[in-house]
Length: 186
Image (cartoon, rainbow, N blue to C red):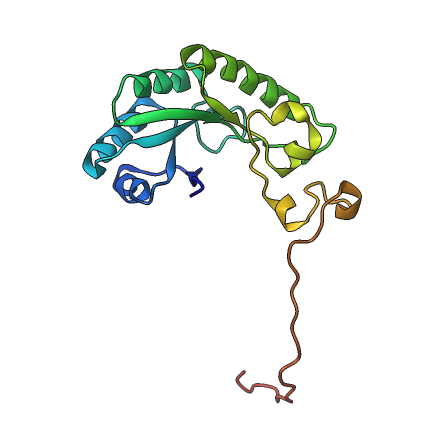
C-alpha cells in the first residue's frame, strides 16, 4: 500500500493507536522520538518518522533547526524508529509576490542540507498546492497537493488557465416545496 503520513501532532496517549494504523508519524524533538520508540516496541515493529521544522508557519514543529537535527540524530541511534523525511509548511505560498515565502524556503533548504549531512537518504517535502504551482525550488522530493487536486486554483484565479481540472461536481434536485406559516416548526 501507499504510506499515510500523519502531519498533525499527537500526544503520548494517541501515539500507539496512531502508529498501530501503520501511519508514518511527525515528530520534532527528542522526547517525541523517544515516545515513538516506546510505541514501536509495544507494537513490535519499526515506525517511520517525519521531522518537522517550523520554518515560519507558527503551528507546530521545531522552531530551532538544532532541535530538529537532534531529533534526527536521536532517532538514528534507536532500533525501532526510522527518520525517513523532513518537512515544513508554507504560511504564505498562496500570496503571490510576498517575501515571506522566500524566507521560509531559504530556511527550510538550509535545514534540509544540514539534515542530509546527518542522514543523506532523508526525503524532504514542503510544497502545498500553491508552492507546487509557484516555485519548483519548493518541490524537493515530493509535494503535498491539497486544494489543487480538487481542481481549484490555490491563488483564487482561473483554475483552467492554471491547467487544473475539476475533480468532482455536486448535483442535486428540489425534493419538496411546502408553504410554512410564521412560527411553524420546520
